[in-house]
Image 1 (cartoon, rainbow, N blue to C red):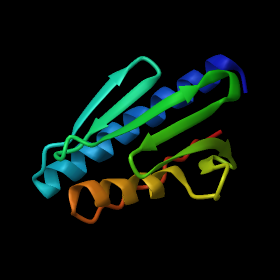
Image 2 (image 1 turned 180 degrees about the vertical axis):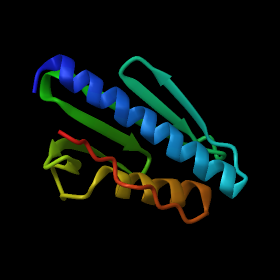
Image 3 (image 1 turned 90 degrees about the vertical axis):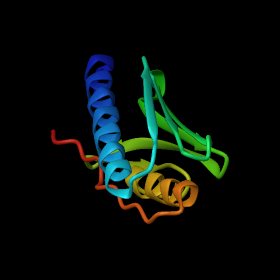
Length: 114
């Protein structure tokens, strides 16, 4: 995949993450801020805890981190999978959002159609 293709895919995934988190926050009636800034997406929870996502363009990965841990995700078969433990990106974000909000969250997988 070219750098341009990766950038387009990453931007699309970040928009999908923002949309799903906004939907979750509205349905749960909680205040979650999403702050995109270039290749970084900050998610600020009501507790002021942060989840940080950023792209690593040379590696064509998305990195995710918060106080609970960090993972590197690469695109495999149209889905973003953790290199360490093979967890899909939406699953780890759902776990983190649930932990910090105290409300069950289940984001849909962020798939890429090729």
